[in-house]
Length: 578
Ligand SMILES: Cc1cc2nc3c(=O)[nH]c(=O)nc-3n(C[C@H](O)[C@H](O)[C@H](O)COP(=O)(O)OP(=O)(O)OC[C@H]3O[C@@H](n4cnc5c(N)ncnc54)[C@H](O)[C@@H]3O)c2cc1C
Image 1 (cartoon, rainbow, N blue to C red):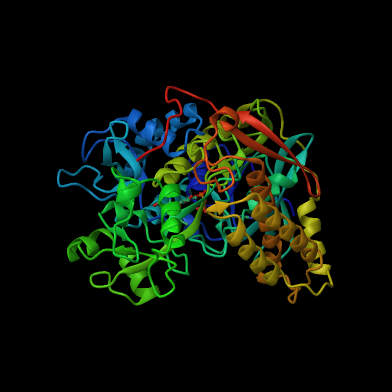
Image 2: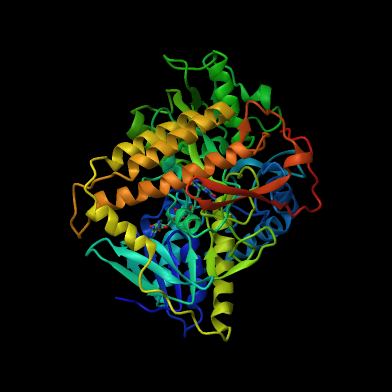
């Protein structure tokens, strides 16, 4: 049965909700948010660290310093026109959120508190670490979701919770809506609409050790990819330095911002050697590599010497309790340790998708290196690549990204709705629906769960912090073998209601596609930059590689790699020391 709307938002995280709210300010527009989870359970709610904005409340700050940090942090692959928008508009957004009811922590003078420092954020173009983070204790993401969700409900946005989008409806090179499986009752429904926004978040579940929720399986990017839409800079997958040992659960950068140290097995604060100015607050790609170096060179900690420690012991009890309550709780719940007395074992953990669906600065999905938009289709948030993070994202800049470009996408969708041409006629059936039917009818014996677990291990072993051509080729071979096994998947549950078996199988298909794109893009880029480190090409190579990767699907196992110029600005590539 079709549900007709003017705009359909896929995903109820920070990006999707901000776009929905912006559209809802136009009273005549009918807006639907489709989300496989209840919006308040989106991964945005896990963000503890905060939002970076040059308000200058704690100490002097300037937008241009934030721009510089973001460009340098991204190893100069960032599009500087987009970064300028990012760092400028976030200031207005923080105040807008404040007016909408967001409970930011307050300084004694009543203004928004900004005391916490985050990795790579500096004063005066790299002089020393600077406090730029706005936060609500260490529950910032959760508070963003509550604030935006309440406003969306108030403005009449219609929510379809537990609807899993399985395809886009495309007609004559335009997007004409989305198709979604009703998780509660079963069946695929079509949602014809003039404009669709993909805001489906990341895909950390592609790795064995990750901070990401099990729901982060790259659905939106996989769907776009299957329609021949290019994916940008997919080789850059960021590892966060401080995941709980073996579990990957994130211990937020807020801890290091509050002064926590990283120490190796010899008790040495090793970041002093690698980044004399920023130390633990160097950007994540660097700190993750340094941790692995310590471990590889025999200076790891723990009985297996395969982790390092976070040391909270010199922080006061009051500070730990008031500024890091969630972090303390995670350490107690998962490790049973007391940060006041114990050292906390950590290792790098898969965290953030730097690349994604290529868009312009209005969230419009583009299909080539000249930024030609695909009418009616938008993307924002972690699934999109604007690109404001270049080759590596700075801490707190993802919340900035989802808010700034979520709002912009909503604004441009409203403008597009006003254009005269009527919405295209949506096709009645989609390939996504056929795939669901195939899975439900299939009588294969292969288990999707096994395929998925194998894939996660392959990605962990060969496509993580350090990469080589041989490892990447092995990974790609394994991914193709796993794809063959995936074609023979059989479900145990063929029911219609809450069929988790079906959805996890379908999501495994998405992860396989995203893993393939990541690996092919990583093979193509024969240099090291930001989060992409090739041991066989350890240098950054600006002469040949200061450009974005665009990968196209041209058939099964067939790709075309194209390149898009970086929008340069006043900050020219320099050596990246911290
Ligand atoms: C543990 C953790 C801590 C973090 N801390 C910070 C931080 O402090 N600061 C910072 O800047 N960044 C942080 N990040 C990163 C940041 O939180 C995310 O990048 C950002 O919240 C992503 O927002 P989003 O709106 O793009 O997607 P999400 O919030 O992930 O939401 C995705 C939405 O898409 C929906 N969806 C997905 N697939 C489908 C489908 N097929 N059909 C229908 N709906 C679908 C989901 O239901 C969900 O509503 C953190 C990330 C993690 C994992």
